[in-house]
Amino acid sequence: RDFCLSRGLGDVYKRQIEDPRQQARLTRYRCHLAGDEGEDETALEVCTKAWKEAEAAGLNGVAARMLLVLAQHRDGEDYERAWEALTIAEAKIASMESATALRLRATAVRAELLAKREPAQAAELFEANIVAKEAFYGSSTTRTVHDRVKLAGLFEDLGRFDEASAAYGVARARVEERLGPRHPHLAAILNNRGTMELIIGRYDDAREHLTDALELKLATPGWNTKRAASTHANLARLFDVLGDERRAEEHARAAITLSGAKPSGYVSAILARVLRHAGREKEALAVARAAWGRPSSRTDADLAVEWALAQTTAGDAAAARALLAGLGSGKQAWPAAEEPAARAALALVELALGNVEAALEAERM
Image (tube, rainbow, N blue to C red; front, side, top):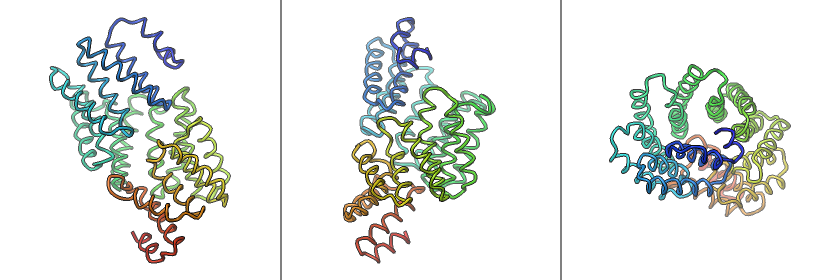
């Protein structure tokens, strides 16, 4: 199975098995694989087809699983339809007997969908689901690791950094205890924790955790290696803060290279920031403009800041102010960890417009 999936031969493997539940499991892997490769439309198409096939065959459990995967892949692109898929899945699960595992999975997906709009409520839901999972699977289960990492990220967004550190610590200990001290699953935990430590100024800890994360990702063939782009970007961000221009650009360029034809908004933002801090404003402007031209990148807070500053440098500070003001309110409010950078950028934009009082107010906020 792994051989086929890694070479895009999922259909070859699928023909060798007859159990529809195993076929559904393979399809679920194919959805995640397509998502990891940035092929969101392919992932949605595969998920939708598998859901319809399972429903036609009367396999409610399989259909519910595919709907949950569909909800996860729609999140961010089509929020309302993601909720629609989750609601249908929950209705199917409610009609089933002995479906505790599916109910726990559906609760986790619900918490993920809530995370961007209602982070405090999502955190409470994740905490309750972790307790329920440990009651069902046992206190030493690794099935709560993903939930704990998501919970830690929510604590970060809410500015509850000590609680986030504790959640990362438990997730790491659980993986090391059950799967070993160098298991690939540790990479995401170390990367996320290192990123948080970078944001709150714990630079030595950030460097240690990000370096370990990068080593683990590069040592894992396939999908984990490609995900090393984000860790390279985080290390670029760290060295940029520390004033090491050479290392910052090396890591930023490595992140772009690993990302392929369509680097994420975050990866592009970090390269733009490194170039801007090095005094290479024209190059920074070109990188930010190219990234902002991709609609999928426009939800990234770091890129919004870099594009606003690039617009200011190019003489369009009014557009930059409108962008930052719009993203800093309502449903798209800045996460607590990102707000200081956004406010600082807004202060620079207001200053460029000659609004000294507004700049000072943004800086105070």
